[in-house]
Length: 316
Image (cartoon, rainbow, N blue to C red):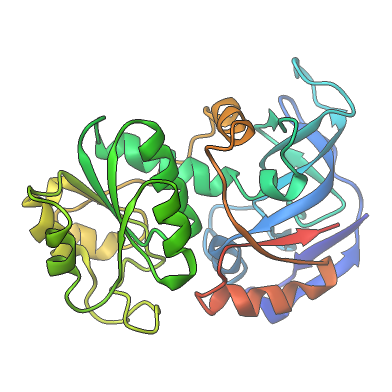
């Protein structure tokens, strides 16, 4: 099969497309014929050496989320059949991962009718991170939540899930996703200088909790690019009055200094719920562009610009 691999750590230039053996599903795994592989910033971190000490030796693959058709079942797998359309996380602890003609999956859910492969493959990481962050933050129905960085895929997923749970939402976002966020029921304001004052004008009372979903935990300046200095966590603490009411999915160093919560333990026990919400049109992650496997460097360039405008996908 054809698959993307890298033999050394470094920038996306080290990724190559080559012919490799198909992987065989282990106990509890399935193998799918991949139709779409979603790309995330985490892919470039893995290629650059993140988790290097926790994964098998090189070569390795990339691509952490996929959608496709079940092709083979590992020992002990039940409840799914050959030919079923499924989506979920790809196993990435071997020489290949999701960016390949065939991929292994440790968790999955059926793709609902009316949901495309592209829409399904965009969901797993954004939905899982957002769901886990809201749970770990402890936000309750009726409370007011500030989602900072709501123009990101994780941020928009958090807004959509929170609104579905009966949580009131103020979202900070740039112009690309602002209208869409307003349309689904969030109050929206912009990033940058004066954000605290703008948020305060949208609510007569305090913000109950705040979720930081910016890629670096940083402040977003007028060009909608994360600032390399400082960050918005102090502003979020000011708005909530308590660092324990703030959670970040990315800026762990600043969180440790400020007493802000973090969340790191990935868990895919809600895949069927993600599928249900996607089928009902409640959970949607916008897809910005699609690429073929041999265009991965082009996709990486747009992804690393931090302004992709939505999910980037590899389509097979």
